[in-house]
Image 1 (spheres, helix red, strand yellow):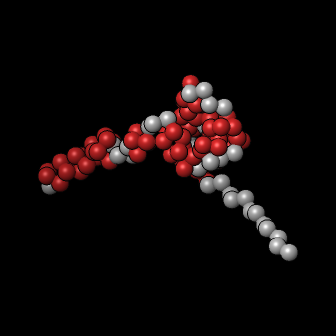
Image 2: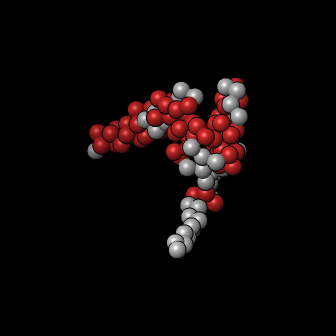
Image 3: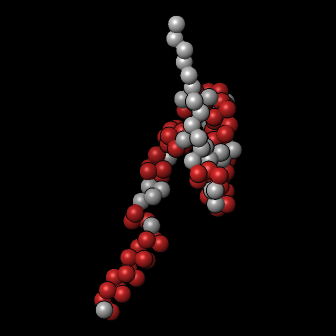
Length: 112
């Protein structure tokens, strides 16, 4: 006889201390993905099957729940044809703040 034990993983600290702007971004992404699903005429059940998640997980994702794994978002973006956009979210060449900081550091070195 086998006994299976499941343990719930503890949410990361970032979940409880997520900044408002980040939280709002998740809510918007979830809402936008819901609209994309609905515009494609897909039910929650069918879309959840295509994502490989349960309907409650899909609902949480569409509500912007920060505990939903990034892989769910990756597959959702794939399903709506936005893989390239998802892959470029953190593209260093588009990070204007970091580029500005590098320029400032370089100009300080030149002054010395």
